[in-house]
Every structure is written in C-alpha cells, then in structure tokens.
Amino acid sequence: MNDDAILCLEEAEENMKHAIDHLEREFQKIRAGKANPNMLNGVRVDFYGVSTPIEQTSNINTPDPRQIIVQPFDKSTIHEIEKAILNANLGFNPQNEGEIIRINVPPLTEERRMELVKRAKIAAEDTKVGVRNARRQANEEAKKLEKEGMPEDDTKYLMDEIQKLTDTFTEKIDKLVEEKEKDILTV
Image (cartoon, rainbow, N blue to C red):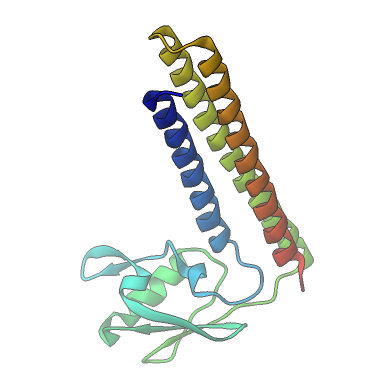
C-alpha cells in the first residue's frame, strides 16, 4: 500500500475514534442512578454576563452515591449557578445552602430506567451512522486513489481494511451500549 492509502486508512480510523469519543461523552450525561459530577456537564452558567460551563465556576463533587455538592468559586454567583441547574432541566431540585448547592439525586423508577436505555441505544445508533459515514468517505477516497493510478488489488485490500476497521468500531459501540444498559438497569 502506498502512503496515500495508509493516510486514507488512518483518517478513517481517526474519524471512527471521534465517533466513539462522542458516544462516551453522551453516555456520561445519561445518569444511572448514582451521583456523578459529569451529570452537570453541559450546564452553562451566566457568569458575569458570560455563558460559562458550570465546571469552570465551581468545585463539583459527590460525597456519596445520592448527592452532588456544587461549591462556587465566587459565593456571589451561587444564585446564578442554582438557576442554571434548574434551567438545564436535568430533573434535579438543587438546594441552595448559602455557601454550597446540594443536589439529591433521586433513585430511578423502572420507567425512567427504560427511557435511559432507549436514549443510550439511540446515541449508539447515531454513533454507528458516524462510523459508517467515515467508512463511506474512506471508500470514496480509495476509489479516487484507484482512478489516480493505484493498482486495483491495492484498492481492494484498502477497502477490506476499511471494512475491518468499521467492524471493530461497531463491535466497540455494541459493547459500550451493553455496558451502559447493564449500568442503568442495575438497581
């Protein structure tokens, strides 16, 4: 295989890795009944007139599996942080205790668990679409290389390697969604 073919394969792998990374970030947002600081990822606070990620305005930790404690760096912003958590519509009821915000993470109902499993499967399916798009782009690039003079056997080999890569990443996605489903359904 020539350098262009190797580059094509590496680019496809990189795009597929990005899809998996995105899925893992999405899974962090799907809570499984246990408190986790990542549950607040994506919450943006009006911090002195600038929309800022909550993790840049506060220390966030979990003293136990049912609680998240948010401790603002600047105590005068506590009301803005509380408002941002409420507006994020995460199903939390933050309690402002003056210097900290305490969030009690309610246990999940069976119905809610099933909704979260469905959400995880949708995110996984979207990721598979991303992986297939990366495969399609790489295959188009391989055909272009063949038109530019790469031998047909090399093109076939490159496309086989791209398919192996796709299969590997699809298996990873299936494994990740299976683990997340088990995590969500574990009471």
